[in-house]
Length: 144
Image (cartoon, rainbow, N blue to C red; front, side, top):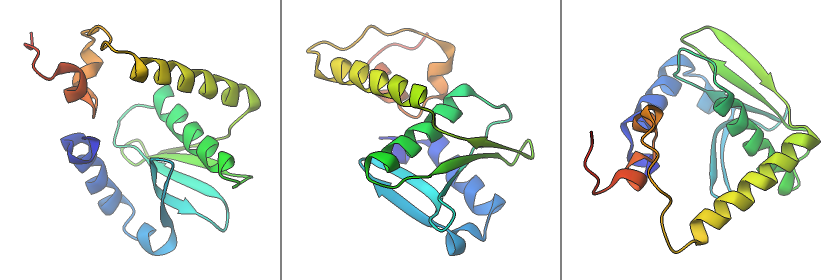
């Protein structure tokens, strides 16, 4: 469902216009259900571009998860680079052992939710409307 989201489309458009040389220099990876748009295999750097005009912790965790997935598949020494073209800022991302432990806890929590017979309650948080997966939670619900 995410692949057809307007938010995802806007992000792809930003990738194409902000860094047009990237597809020639870096490769796209798809591994364990994760799609990494720009990976520099020679330097082992994940480049993640965000259209946001603010830096968010969720962006850092997304890149940390990508690093975690690569490490689980035998690719070591990977770091990440979060890029915010609208802010003209970049942030280097590393994965610590503490991060790995937290990610593994997150995955357990997610697995528990996914395997439950009932859907979790709707939280009605305003950030939900910006989520690429909005339809999963709110399909058939009356918006307020």
